[in-house]
Amino acid sequence: MILVTGATGHVGRAVVSSLVSSGHEVAALVRKREAGQGRLPRETALRVGDYEDASTLKAAFTGVDRLVLISSDGAADAVTRHHANAIAAATAAGVRHITFTSIVDIGENSPFYYAPAYRDAERRLAACGVPSTILRCGLYSDFILDTWLAPASGELVLPAGQGLVAPVSRDDVAAAVAAVATGAHTSRAVYTITGDRALGFNEIAACYGEATARPLRYHLCSLSEYLASASARLDEPWPQAFSSLCASIAEGRYGGVSRDFAMLTDRQPESFRDFLARATSAMPAEG
Ligand SMILES: NC(=O)c1ccc[n+]([C@@H]2O[C@H](COP(=O)([O-])OP(=O)(O)OC[C@H]3O[C@@H](n4cnc5c(N)ncnc54)[C@H](OP(=O)(O)O)[C@@H]3O)[C@@H](O)[C@H]2O)c1
Image 1 (tube, rainbow, N blue to C red):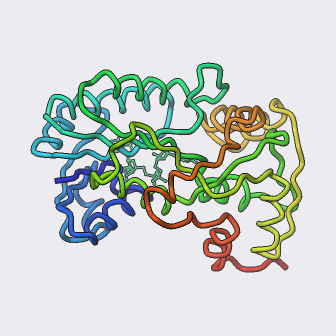
Image 2 (image 1 turned 90 degrees about the vertical axis):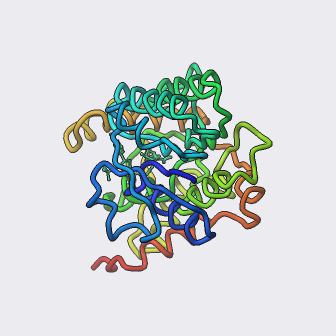
């Protein structure tokens, strides 16, 4: 049996659907049973547990062969604790393999708010004694669209310098996770999951303008300007998380393009242009 955490979320749900449709026995970790009912394929066994409560995780992971640990979100100290709880519970429950969604930028000198949390999780995985496969994921195309492009009007104001990113859609991340979770690709301990091209924010803004007929121009701002404007709109930790992410992008930490996605799935990742065309087709044109 393969158990998928974060199964009510975007990536987790897509992983569950993919595994069920390829005939695997799948369980889903949900915080509330009702949240899983109707949203996941009916063949999915629901296991209730919370990353905050290690005892619920150990019970939920009992009898599971392979765990897909979709990373947690929120304040970094909670994220660190959640991953630690899940890895300890999987070890105690006798899980035989863990697939974990990490991030491409876990460098010791990275300014990114979440880098220490993911370094900690990767260290725990290496030390826990359970074989694991880590997928270091680039920025989600969906994240760029939802967080930065769609809310912008005319100008995309970010402190990302001339840094490049190689966006990958959540659906493609899920496809890569599902390929690893079935056990066909465990020869390497770490895979890097990115899109097929690295783009600067000038090009990202232009792509959005073409897809939506809402022209957008990238305007570089300072970190402190971004932090001030994000703090007026968003609760912590997001202003800090997003500004430090931009600092990391500006330092060139997100520009790498990996071929691991194609190797794992036997197809090319969806391009950012195609993603935008698909994701924005329901949005009304401006004017
Ligand atoms: N690379 C990127 O660009 C990027 C961007 C954003 C996020 N991420 C990471 O990628 C992960 C997956 O993305 P996504 O879009 O699928 O996220 P999502 O839709 O927000 O889903 C998050 C999932 O985690 C579950 N969860 C949250 N707290 C939990 C807890 N205490 N115990 C058990 N489950 C808990 C949620 O359950 P409920 O339904 O009960 O809330 C949900 O199923 C995120 O969690 C984050 O770590 C990466």
